[in-house]
Image (cartoon, helix red, strand yellow):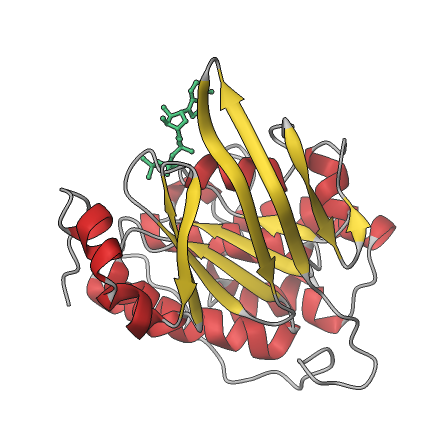
Length: 269
Ligand SMILES: Nc1ncnc2c1ncn2[C@@H]1O[C@H](COP(=O)(O)OP(=O)(O)OP(=O)(O)O)[C@@H](O)[C@H]1O
């Protein structure tokens, strides 16, 4: 029998929505960030302000430096120069767990769930960590997250037995359990069919509304980026080529040249 997600419920009452009175400024600031491998810059002088509650896209052809940038933000890699701050707090020198505790949640290009744990346990691990280090509320509780992501009925299944699209959703649920101020999604629509991808657009927008966190989306699917993002930054050879609205960016001749015309990924819209 095919495995199906529960219908995703409507909005949960908002507590930390953008503009809510007690909401902190949840900005992710990247200033002059550089990283070299050998003599080659993977990321060079990148400055990017991810505004509170913003859904910001990060695109660029293969090898542009997107994964390196996300790894620098999340503590997987140490920058050679530059800084990353979350809510004004420097993440310099912090490792992966400390960055997560500081408010940076992420998913991975190649899904990295705990294979030997159930769907529920995968979320539980993150929720337990968050309860010790972050201010959480009822939205971050395991059952609420599973319900929000349409995974309640699958809670007892081993995570890796889920279809690909649902594993991606589970990764988002696990990242949200950490009560992040900023959520970094690395190719969240990869491997999804059109229907799943469309549902994911709605889900990401709903997550932003409900949880009040900003979202940085790395994605090759430009149709997806156009639908979900308010601004898009283009990375090319490790540097920011341009930042703007999806319409302006995707029609920019320089972007078409390096990203679409240059043998990059097709926009299938
Ligand atoms: N650990 C590493 N050692 C050496 N070079 C690396 C390493 N990681 C990345 N690079 C190089 O840095 C550059 C940027 O790679 P990166 O993976 O960040 O690009 P990307 O935009 O994420 O590409 P893709 O879309 O294919 O995932 C590439 O030239 C890559 O070969």
